[in-house]
Length: 385
Ligand code: GLN
Image 1 (spheres, rainbow, N blue to C red):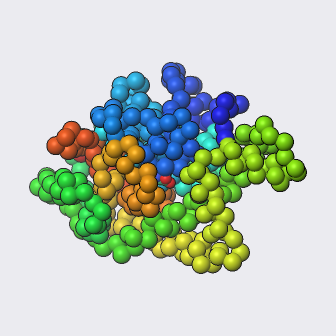
Image 2 (tube, rainbow, N blue to C red):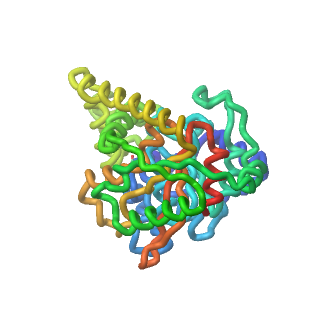
Image 3 (cartoon, rainbow, N blue to C red):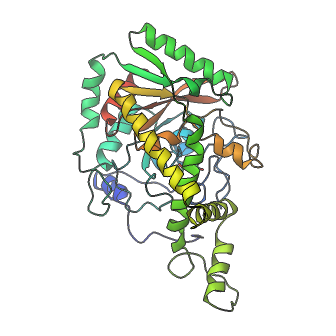
């Protein structure tokens, strides 16, 4: 749809990086409109995981993850609507930070699902992520959803927080570690980590989360609904691909432009989103999903009233083989089970590369904290790395 398109203005994050003397060396491959978990829905073809070229890098921001993994750059940006920074970071063995909703301006970011989208950072270590966050975060007249909270001096305060040697109160969802889809190797690595954290004087508590199996359906109902409206602007007149064929009338023209321009996954989501928003089904799907989203926010409040952070896997499996999950959309969607919670409730989450399988495939853990508590999240992450 956007083949050959060059942005006519810089995103706020890009302007802020340039103002600090950052050298930008490239644009990265991504699943089309950030819809995907494997980079296989990109019109340009998939990026290959640098740990094993037969495997996917994760997605949607797979190109950004591999650019850091392969040492092509020090840091890169991606977008995370339901895990697209944390999951590719997990698959590629790098750090991936999704800040709180509203911590970073989305001005200049192509919208997928506006109440979920957040720009995130890939890096090798925590201090680099902290520094980039400090540069790009904060209020922006061009995005009214950005928090007015002042930006914390993450990079300098990080070392103070780290040296304080704080003992944390951590929690994890019992149902998350017991989920049948979770790879036993990931489960045992995380269980081992919990034991080590406890031995080091942190408290780690298992808490119940009965709504776990609802997070993926809720995410897909709400994000496809938002996507179906956001993507209506690509009609070949305002934006995007225009057919070379002659058409009967304006409706046929739009239809042809959109049919030719969008890839399969994007069309599927636009149709799903249009369906859940349609008058007849609105109450059954969209309204219900919004109610669940509210329950999830309450749950998140409860957790962070009592705990500093929540730990979790990033994904139920490690980087899989290219093509392996192409035939099974449901399985691919369900694999988002660990990342979408943070986007549904707007909290920050970070993926930390802590482990490797016996075959040398990287994976890590995810740590989440309360809204706008990025400093504490980064300090804890630095202790864990
Ligand atoms: N894998 C998720 C999806 O396909 C997340 C995408 C994202 O965060 N952009 O929707």
